[in-house]
Image 1 (cartoon, helix red, strand yellow):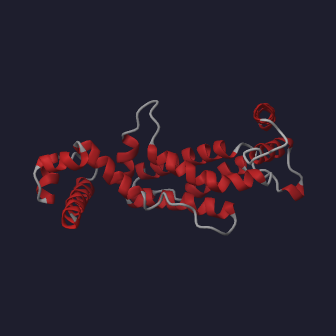
Image 2: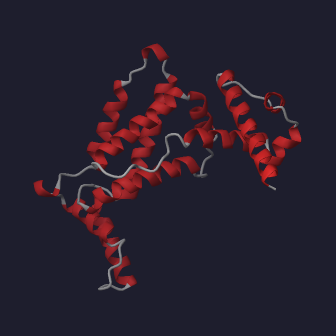
Image 3: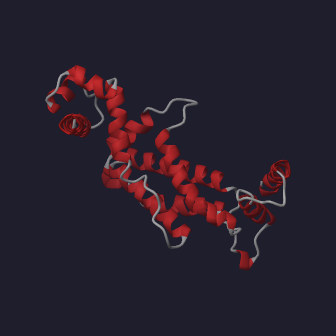
Length: 229
């Protein structure tokens, strides 16, 4: 049984490696199922057994590649500094692996959430939530994560589209800071706005508040949402 499991994993890895290599070599061009199977040393039915289809294999390759930058934030340090570092890591990965990056965003369908983008937003939410709780956000943490992730991917795609020898890398930093300026409120010691305080209280309501009923918490959260906007 152990030998069978090892063999299965090895075959799957060979297919992932072969597809990844061919995607890189194709420079954005098409990659055939036959070429992938020949590179991996397997027959087409083996590919379908592991991934269902060629598209299933390509999705798995992209998912594997993106785990290099979609990672849980390391504990400690200022959340804003870690958010900045995450932005730079995202852009850097896209520029180093443009085929993977464009492959992912080229498959987005209207109305269908992208699982990897959702993962990135979930990681950002972990960093924005303590800022919201401290009264340092102008919008709710989930909205901040959504806006930041959208701007991050937009800048990355824009830079990929520019000729490599004339890319305006400074644009990434400028947009990153502009987005943060729009999301971050003044520190509490300097006087937070009503909206930022409403966000802080709304975030605190995510924790158990025994003094209020469920209905009361929902109603209060709705009022605070209005104030935060």
